Image (cartoon, rainbow, N blue to C red; front, side, top):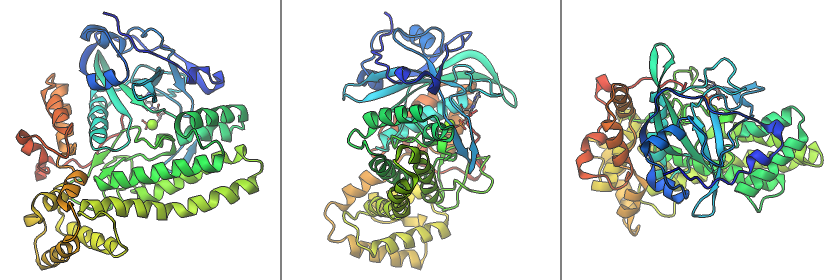
Length: 472
Ligand code: AMP
Ligand code: MG
């Protein structure tokens, strides 16, 4: 049977200066690792056996109706403006309108160089492909907005990094791949027709009742405030919150050197390239405000004049920190069983986090223990912790359904970094079973399978992963 993807491409109709049409590179021997059938079904994708899927989702052939293109964008990388980035190793195949009526991009990542590849080879190796597949699907299962993974395919070819590595291609699904940096490039270059076309496209797709730039900015700010609070609630560190990795839709995008925290510490960093901790766990709440200020700057040319623009945008940027604090409080209050937080609850949560930091307690397991047993047990020893627990119990005494709320707010299973690394090492040696097992367990993070206790354990000292490397 032939693969049928019901493409309905709208980005390809935008001005041709906004992207480059590009065919994927051929690969030697494609082999399917994973195909996300439930997601495919929601997208209305039918037909095709494994070899046909592997061929088409590795770039060996173009599915009927696809119009592959690389999108142009720029972005601030670690605070410095890179005037041209763009999809260097990704191709938008096209869009489909899914069963829920939502338009979604289907993109290949690792499908060969594009005009924006600069000095890169346009390829991806197996490790980052399996990491993004696993972590993005885990995020989705946790209920956090994210791009998703439709397929992972081995190319049969080699990719050269510090050593030869097996090549792979990820098929990614997103509400769109429009980034803060997509707006930045057209604003910075004075390409106003393109900026207007992008704005109209983004409004229609994401915020159809937000046709005025100040309202649009407000929607993006709200979506991003919720997203950052959701990340913090599960101990997620994106790793590279550059403005080109910040989606207008409010979805988590571009999983590179990302990781979930084991022991709680607000300054935790995993990315090997983040030497100053710009994108550390707790810093994410500040950086997103900076990123939204860059978006606001890029929207200025869409306003009648700069003065009006600044008057409309600046108060929103100034208010974003409070917005994040509110979203954070709602998330963390739910994590300790509280439905409607009061002002004093922020201090109660802060005290718990301080105790966790001092005890180097595992973030996920401490909250889950509170949910499952009403006590952090051995994870939080000492008199101060016992005192906190007493005051917490008193606070939630009258909260209806506190336990159920906590179970639904505290995942038992997260994609722990040492498990990801072990899964990648196995796949590199040809064994995909750990990848499949990890993904199966992560599908129900709040209701863990009984045989997955080992996946809930933090790393042993010799298993601790110190750094993750960029998705190249
Ligand atoms: P990232 O750090 O993955 O968000 O990528 C930043 C920029 O580098 C984007 O424009 C990517 O398309 C580009 N890039 C990353 N890796 C490669 C590669 N292997 N070949 C070509 N371009 C790449
Ligand atoms: Mg990126």
